[in-house]
Length: 97
Image (tube, rainbow, N blue to C red):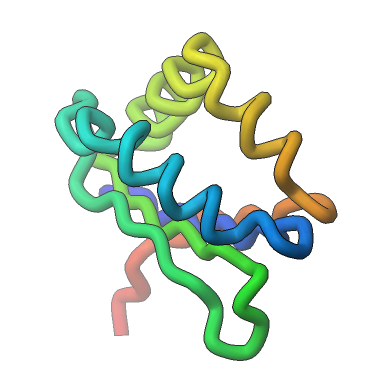
């Protein structure tokens, strides 16, 4: 079963447009990562300084490999540097209802 990951990242005041531009240039090849089903980024309506990443991978191992790839590239360091707080990360599975 696939895993959906929701990451809510608060961005420092005045830097969210910079992050949006950075994402456009640093995410082009991310969708071709093994096991990737979906990678989207949204700006929260209730707090425009928050970026919400919606990510779906075939397995948790695929997601962990993707996260390791992002770390090796320095992407996580960049995002940590523009964040104004700790990200909220939720791993969810499709409910069988």
